[in-house]
Amino acid sequence: QVQVVESGGGSVQAGGSLRLSCTASGLTFDDYAMGWFRQAPGKEREGVSCISWSGGSTYYADSVKGRFTISRDNAKNTLYLQMNSLKPEDTAMYYCVARFNGGYCYWDASDYPYWGQGTQVTVSA
Image (cartoon, rainbow, N blue to C red):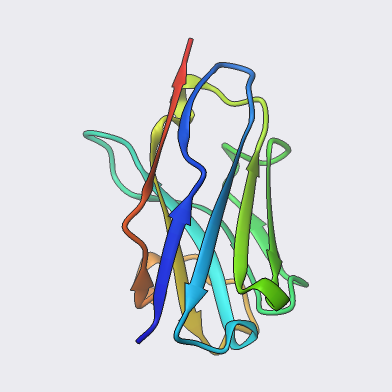
């Protein structure tokens, strides 16, 4: 079955950087669009970034544009999220997501049937 597993979360001070990784198994990775969502305590889940199977289409939430970069290595079945200039408001559980027919960058959470367990990112002021 399809599984996606996140890693790379942690605690950093504001202005710092983290790189999240997501390793997928049970699928042909380059058939799938991938993305990142996050949810902070007491807040709604929100899309962070998404990427098409080829990497040719990407999208970012306004709140992270210019600070976060999504990428993928199809040879390694791995998705990345480079997060720079982190802010306390970036504190959240970050989830990796996947869906088949990945020619586009999908933005709605309901478009993704496969979700990881999440990795916690905490940014202190």
